[in-house]
Each structure stands twice: as C-alpha cells, then as structure tokens.
Length: 434
Image (cartoon, rainbow, N blue to C red):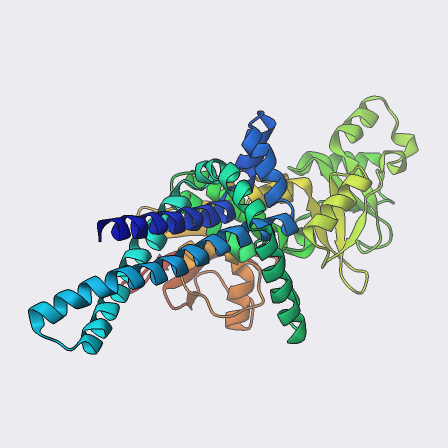
C-alpha cells in the first residue's frame, strides 16, 4: 500500500510541476524576461524566443497540458487499481459487507480523496506559487519543459492538429496564446501593480492619464479660441507689441479677415526683437510662422505625428465647417499627462483650491473626467468641462451666485466671464459619499 501511495504522491507532484510551468509561462512579464535576456541569461534568451512567437508558445503550453492530463489519468487509474482491493477487503472484514458494494465504496473513497488532494496540491497550490513568482519559475522550468516538449512532440502535433481541424469544422478561427491586452485590461494591470506596491500612486496616475490621453481628440484637450490672444495681419508691429505686453502668453495668433482665416503665429520674443531693431516698417508678416491646421476629431497619436512632421509646437483646431475652434499645443498634451503639475501657458486659470469649510474652488474649464473625485456622480452629458455641464444642466448661461444641484454636491457659481463659468464652489451634501 505504501508504494502505491508514494507513486500517487509522485504523480501529483508531476501534475503540480506542469501546472506551475503553464501558469508561470503565461504570466511571466515579457519586459523582465527581455531584460534578463539582454543581460545574458541563457534560459531567458530561449524563453523569450518562445513567448514572442505564438506558434512556439502554443506548443510549449500544449506540453504542459499533456503532462497534466497524462499524470492525472495515470494517477487515477493506478491508484484505484492498486488501493481499491486493499480498502474493500478491510471493509468486508470490518463492516461485513458484500464484495461488490465494498469495492464500490472503496472506489468512491479513493476517487474523492484523490480528487481533493489533486486539486489542492496539484492545482491550487502550484498555481498560486507560479503566479507569485512567475518570472523565476518560468525560467527554472524552461529546460525540463524543453525536454518534455521533445518527448511529447508526436502527441502535440496530433492534438493541436485535431483541435485546429475541429475548430475549422465549426467555423471558429484558431487562436494562439498571445500576451495581448485591451486598454481596460491594461488599466486593471496597472491597478494591480499599484496595489501590489510595484507602482507609486503618482506613477499609476500618470500612466492612467496616458491611457486616457490615447483615446482623446484634439478638440478635447485644445485651448478654446476665447482664451487665445489673436490679431489681424493688418495691425502693425506696434499694435502687436502692445498686445504682447498686455498678454501673459508667448504666442500671438495672426489671422486675415477673420479669426477663421488663420495665417500663423508670431512669437513675442520676435516681436520685441523687431521693435528694438526698428523693423516696424516691415510689419509683422516676416515674423509669422506657419502653423498646421488639424480637424477637431484628430486622435492623439495622429496629432503628435502631425506636430512632429511640421516641426511645430502647436496646431490650430478647426471644425467641420472650417471655423477655428482653438489651439492645441505640446503643453496641452503634457498638461493632460501631468494634470496640475504641468500647466500650459494658456491654461493658468485651471486650478483647484481647497477652502477652509471643506469646499473646493474649481475652474469652469476643469475637465469632467478628472472632476469625478470632487463632483461624485454626474449625469450623462456630452460636455467636456464643468462649465459645459453647468450650462447643459441649466439650459442657459448662469449668473454669479446661482446654485446648481447635482446628486452628491451643490455647485455655487462664483464668476462668469464671456458667457462661461470661470470659477465655482463645490460643496458636498451631507448624505453624499464624495
């Protein structure tokens, strides 16, 4: 009986080995394996070749699955064949049972005990260890799995081929094991990394903003035309110089007949230099730098490529009718990534001020997607900013002092300029969870 139990324990260990190898290989961090490979780790070099090739990874995982299945079947058949007669004989002697029911009870007890032991020591325990130390275990398992793969090669070819044929028969496309994650899955991975202590909260926030940014458009991050400093090309150098002195910005938008006819931008330092050198007779036309014009729905990756191709730090955003909507800059992009840490020159009024009574003073231009931590639950809206939400809720431009009720907070309008809310006070309701 003892040899049979020892062999059963050995087969459970074999099962645990292949379970750990499978989970560790799938969960291994490719970046970490690549780093070790660059450092000269032989196992990492070879493992990287496998996990980066779907076909190779399929065969590698199939080796684990064959090992798991084979060890489980052999263990069940061998243990029942060798232990059932011994246990049934004891039942007949102790309980005075008939041979047939005694053998059935013995088989049931063996199956139950073996299944529980297999699940605990052959499945759950190795899986937990493999997921915790995936990189190290994946590397340690490489050479044994490579040998097993060569031994099981005929079975792998037969089973993979049969599986692919059955999928084709039912019209299901064959897929391979790939380390591919959707944006939502990446968000979850980042959250897990933060919870596990691998990412600092600030690092997690920046990466979260980067993922959000990839899904935004030029319109969503631009500075609206109402906040730009602009002048007609008909104005002379002196007018541009005066405007530059009054403006806190370093760039002035130059247009033709109307602001929808954008000609380019001039840099304040060029204006100052031209005035000092008495080049006013030349006007501002020689100072104008061309600027790309992009559609409002242009994605971030295409926007950054457009800026790079034109060697420009900014671009004019136009609507579908060719009208100027605003200006998008590299600073806008960095501001989206860094939030309040890096603020573009055009967005100095986007601030957060915590008041003594636990209320918060926010800019109307504050993005709604970032404001949930202050506003709590907000109604469905197409607005991008708090100002847009307020106007959409009221159906009109509010007046200073007006109150807007949301589910978790009340918004008191502090200031309104040019038909837009510039500042408001956010106060939590007593029964809210914000």
